[in-house]
Image (cartoon, rainbow, N blue to C red):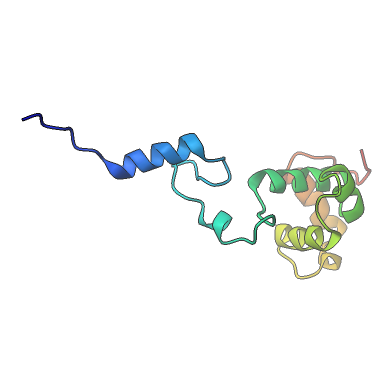
Length: 118
């Protein structure tokens, strides 16, 4: 009788998930990214999107239309960008983000702090 090796199904599933799934579906440890599946299809906000938003703020300040046009090629609505900016700055209204907060944000993220657009 031939003895078969024990299969660690959890490790096998993680390896298959890592090999067959996109980066947004899996976390770095190859566990499932549940927020990806709990979000309406087409509306998932990835780390890459967040990096683009940060770069948009560094380049264009809080100009939602410029961020949308240049960073997202008009694939995100102004409302969605405003909401994401509110989350980014932890405010309920973008009007609550003053020059001081914007300058601190740009300094923290290594951007232009003089307020001019690139």
